[in-house]
Amino acid sequence: MTTLLEVGHLSKKFVSGGGPFRPVRSMHAVNDVSFSVSVGRVVGVVGESGCGKSTLARLILRLIEPTGGSVQFEDLDLLAQKPKPMRALRARMQMVFQDPYSAIDPRYTIRDAVTEPFDIQGHRYTAKEKDAKTAELLDMVGLSGHLANSYPHQLSGGQKQRVGIARALALNPALLVLDEPTASLDVSVQAQIISLLEKLQDELNLTYIFISHDLSLVKYFCDEVLVMYLGRVVEVLPDTEAAARHPYTRTLLDSTFDPDPRLRRTIEPLAGEVPSPFDLPPGCAFAARCPSATGKCSTELPVLSSDGGHPVACHHPL
Amino acid sequence: MSMLRVEDLGVSISTISPLSGVSFDLERGEIIGIVGESGSGKSLTAMSVMGLLPLIGGQVDHGKIEFDGIELTGISENEYRKLRGGRIGLITQNPMTSLDPLKKIGPQVDDVSRLHLDHDKSQAKARTIELLGDLRIPEPASIYHLYPHQMSGGMKQRIVIAMALAADPDLLIADEPTTALDVTVQAQIIRLLGDLVKQRNLSLVLITHDMSVVAQTCDKVMVMYAGTAIERGRVQDIFKSPRHPYTKALIGCIPHGLSKTVRLKGIEGTVPGVAQYPAGCRFHPRCGLAEDICKETVPAFDTAGSRAAACHFALGTAQ
Image (cartoon, rainbow over all chains, first blue to last red):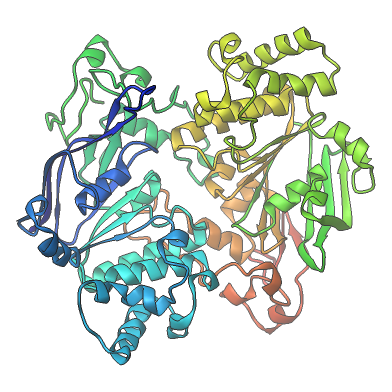
């Protein structure tokens, strides 16, 4: 399989404060993340709020500049691209946002929203061509062509997310980064969107990076899964059947409820919550909440290692 | 006697009727899940029981709400004020907005027992600290002096739970108590609520959109769709063999544990808005089993075993 995307040691450090009364504080939202994505795969990124999932998505598409590391897309060094070629490259890599309510300009008709990418990329289409493109794109995402002249407020959340997907597909991208595309939708609509994404992937041979906090959804939808905790990848599940090796992944799995009352189990919830990403300890960021932590964990940072199975960053893998 | 008994509840807000045909009952020590998608009327049901409809210009125009033998639909605002926060506790969805940001959390919890149990300042404080300890909050005596912004989301939700419990209620209503929280914290809060119900022999109405939460915690469930109840019964029975096509479809929308060969389908179409409720069965435009009768006649509840479903073609009915 050909590699579409290669991310190497990607980091993003945010600095805040620095006023007269506020000391400068910095946090690594994404810290030394490496992975690669082959054509046609669905790679999931899962983690709790604040773990750096969305920052990672934005870094991959170079919507924000990283503070370190590299991104190779279709064998091009993304970070070395000048603005113009970068803009052309953007046609190949698109993003679908979490909140379809705010992702579409309320003053744009659906037709405007879906054809805006062509204007940005300098395609000079006539009104007639744009109508045809709109009809084609709406049909692709299962929307009626009548909606072309509607405004976003006239659409339901599920329909808006379909528009978001149609717009992302307008320029025939190779890679779609889906940032929690169903988090603000009802479950029945979530299922519609997920099956639409599956259908599109088959038809268009797309590659997805799917970001979510919902581990059962990720396990259902993805081929492989990166588990993130406080900016670092702590485990890479090579397939969705793989047993968790990191204690954090284990707890995440245990925290998802089974929709079967016969399988009711006493959940042994993890104590505490995700700590502040400022002032992280020198060792494993999960050590304070980890049932199997030892002294080594709080002083020595574990690195991703494939000894004894798939990659995991833990001194005491399960 | 049931702790809470709702019979054929209907609500009107000016000229629209966003809620109708809601019935359920709840015994002491039981948990009922009210589940449905957004706009199904879950929160409106909770507001009706709490007597909060006047806040949004609504009123109960049909049916009964009986709490421990007291009929609530006719009582005065004064009597309601004694119940609310007293014998009936409410846990809201977003702990970030249900606490006063300008006041330390301890005194906020104190207010409840001072108002409802006539505690003086020091009694109330002692009680709050004990309660925080019961909710597994570490170092309750120092947490007492913190402001909401100094706490994490899960901790704030515990404070909201402490406020709901401060006057020793008999009934708790939790409206999406974990929706704003991360999964590991959600597991903690759900576990905590289940333990509280057992220890204090409470009754809990758990409102959620998540069928998995219902499966893991509730004794009974009522499924709502477009402002009305469509199925109710014991959790075990409903998950094993749902009778309403909507309930069945809703369970089918959960990706948990599905193999790569079973694919999610979703439910075609969207939940109708209040102004566009279709005639007949409100689910018929999205239902695979719908026939002409569904477009014309509102189905009545049909009971089989522990399950009652409002469907002309309820599944699992002896034909």
